[in-house]
Every structure is written in structure tokens, then in C-alpha cells.
Image (cartoon, rainbow, N blue to C red):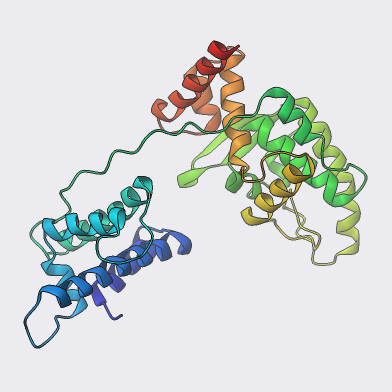
Amino acid sequence: MESPLITDFLNYLKFEKRFSEKTANLRETDLKQFAEFLIERSKESAAAETQPSVDQLLLSADVDAIKAYMDFLSEKKYSEEKKYSKATIVYKLAALRSFYKFLVKGNQLSSSPVTVSNPKVEKKLPRIFEYKEVKTLLETPPMNNMLGARDRAILETLYSTGIRVSELVALNMDDIDFLGEVVHVRGKGKKERIAHIGSSALQVIQHYMEFRSKLAQSKPDFDTKVLFVNKNGKRLNTDAVRKLMKKYLKIAGMDTTLSPRVLRDSFGVHMINNGADLRSVQELLGFLNLKAVNIYNELAGQARRAS
């Protein structure tokens, strides 16, 4: 499917907005799905001998086309494809909003056709670990070998600091202040912050570093600046952390569908349960506003009512 408009938009996302390749690819998939929908819709209704180009269809799409597309996604109105959840439809609609905003900005259109409201999405509270579940998970990795000690240190760090997986894999050796018991974190938008880390997690990290030092001696191309490395001495990626989380959840007999995010969310709720105020939790977790932290307050209240 050839669409210079979509290509220009994707280049804008990647080179001007600095979106990741993964995010840009998701936007491309959403836009091409919409374009394919417009093509099929045009075939059904058009009497013209020549089929409009993809870009012509994109530029001529109106609010009725957007509404029909939402019906297609949610009700299988035009095909036997699976219907999508409301949350997914909201995301796909956001891709269209961003695309048409780009076209208006570039004087390709005078106004955007994406004027419909998002479908209401039921708020789903995240799964939170109880304290004993955290303890069970953290004690699952073996401590007598390099990978086990590293994995224990990773899980301990995620829970003790509440940092994101992307922030964890970006940590370097000099980001850990053992004396001050803090971690220097590089968060979203290159914003830096200080996260406190417990002495227990620091002890586990020090234990892991003994194995790490031995590995460094056997690997001439070992990346000495990186804190958490793989067996080849290179920086871990986020997928590796998610896989090891799944591995230890399975060993512990826990829900393997959970992601490392549950440790971050549990940290936030447990902080509030222990008397921390929302502003402090916001700063520790690196959220831009208090609204994102309110869900932890709600979960903490829910736990108190249940006890």
C-alpha cells in the first residue's frame, strides 16, 4: 500500500518527535488498517470506474467515515475480523487524531475529521502484590550463581525503588550510591530523578556484583559501565527482564501473565499504606502529575476496606 502522506507522517514521528521505532511501527499499522477500511468502503459505495488513491481517500475522509470505522472495529460491521476492546479503539483513534493533526499543520487539510469522542473505557485497577507475595517472588531466584544473583538483584531493585523496567536496564554502575542509599534514574523524556533504595536491595546488588566482577575478568569485551548485564557482559534489554519475571512467577506458582509493572504498582500502594503522601510517591515514581498516582490511593483504600 503506497501512501506518501503516511510515509511523511511516520518520518515526522521518528525524526522530529523522536518516537521509538516500535511506537512508529504501531502507528503505521493503525493508519494502514484505516486506509484499508477506506478502500473497502469506497469499493462498496463508489460507482466511479477508477478507484481513488490511498492518499485521496485519506484526505477525503469525513466524520462519518471515522464513525463507520469505529463501528467496524467494535461491531464487525464490515468484516469477520475480531472486534476490538474499547481501550484498543481509543488507541487507534489517537493514531488518527495525531495523523490528521499533522495534515492540518502541513496545510493538507483545513480541519481534522476526527471530532468524535472516545468510547468510554471502564477503569481497570491494576493487580497488586500483597507483602507476602512480594517476599515469595523476591526469594525465588537462587543466589549461588551469576544469573540467579543478578535476577534477585533486579527484582529487589524494581520493588525497592519502584522504577520502570526501561529505567532499570539503563542503570550504570555509578548510578548506585551505596553510601547515600539512592539510585540516579534517567526517566521518560530524559528527566533525571533520585530514587531511594533499601539496604536489603543494596546488599543483594553487592552480592551480584561479586559474580559480575568474575564474569568481567573472563570477557574481554565486557561492558564495565553497565550495572545489569547478560551472560555475555552486555546491557540487558527490557524483554529479557520481562522473561525472567515470567520465569520466577512460574517457579513461585504465581500468575505468569503479570509484568514487572506489578512491582512498581505494588511499591506505590505499599508506600501509601506506610504513610507516604501522594506528592512524595509521585516524585519517587517519576510521574508528571498527581492524577497518575490517585489510582494507588484508591487501591490502598480498597485494601484497607477489605481488611
